[in-house]
Length: 248
Image (cartoon, rainbow, N blue to C red):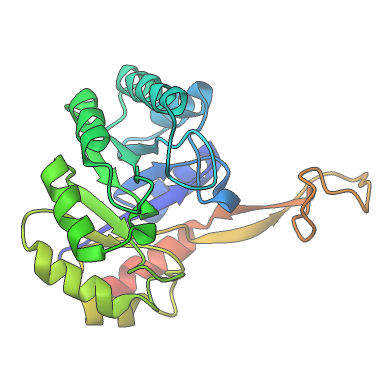
């Protein structure tokens, strides 16, 4: 089985660890707890300078829904130009209309602007009103890849729809399962879907080196998210997943 592994990373450390583990490509994001937003210029440049593998960058100006006003759309255009200047290989976008349809016109314009970078349509697709009509719209817009969890919280739950989407897409677009994939379920998902590309984070918890710790305060106002630990990509987890995929 020929496959590619894309690792979602939010830091230089995670991106480099993914490369060490054998990943084929990085999807660089900020604010992963919100599903990912566009990282800073400094982050994009630093990660690009520390990688030899492909780098894709998410273009998402904020968390929340995928219905963007004109100001937000203009931000997306500017961020795409920055990515081109930094030598990024691809961008990751997703725009919907009020009724849950894919915004084909704006998507196509961003794809044209991004050229020659490749374009992945991200999991905004999982919030669209009709997956098969959405698939056709994304193909017609010119995207080269679709990241999806099969319109479920995890790709394992959405495996049946992912399999159908892969059959429907044929060679017209790459369908890449993502969300909740790890060493315990990647083999099952690969067997069910037959996908050639997979998206995951492969992270482990890293404890802070701070010796003084002010307890009882959450900087983001969200309980359960500690300021004294962070999640970083674990190269051994990536190696283990690649080994599993090679055995299928």
